[in-house]
Image 1 (cartoon, rainbow, N blue to C red):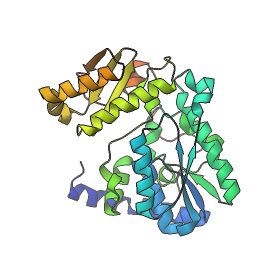
Image 2: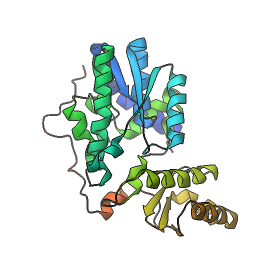
Image 3: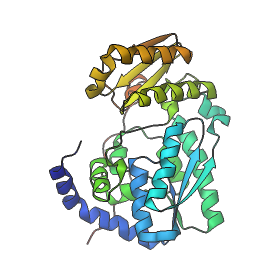
Length: 297
């Protein structure tokens, strides 16, 4: 959680970055925002609407890999921001390369997404497609960014050099409820690489995580290991999990969903654990060759 003092300091130090982003959006003239309702894409949409008004459009793609709660939150956020919002279906599961769940699974999902975005962009006569890729994402395993580059998607946050912490600070400053939203990822990320992604497995995971939300958990993952559901929760939420009545509710609900065993991971939730378990290396820190940041005067 960012303190008020930290938020103020981050906004002051990164103000030139935000102004550069605003100028770049104005220069585009119009844009379609690939909008998931997460911290980053919500911030992009907010700024795009402030700069472009009706010439900014949010597009949310729904599939079995998106939790129903996330889809509903995206709708509510777009309405709150005052953005035009289009919701379309996607079917990455129909691609055998995606369903096989290789370490670059996200590439195939994002290819499906940006195919849809690009088609709608052309249909509506908008200038560019925007995503929520930020400056910190260069340090992580992000195969989906290759798909973005292939589709000429613009990453205004990364171009301006805005980090995740700065985006959260500015989101709070602009009144966005996502400023402290826990980091989320698609439901397929709960399944170990090499284990196929199926609609039934995604539904089982989504239903299990919905039970955790009902019990008040905020930062968590239900990792799928065939008969075993391995729960990762934030360190500050361990005490909640250890309450006997909470454990009983979780166990009963998960067994009813088809799991035979329910386990709590002794290491608190940390993004990227499945990548580490599979030996997927993070890229070297820094931006890729050929990527330049705008000059801020």
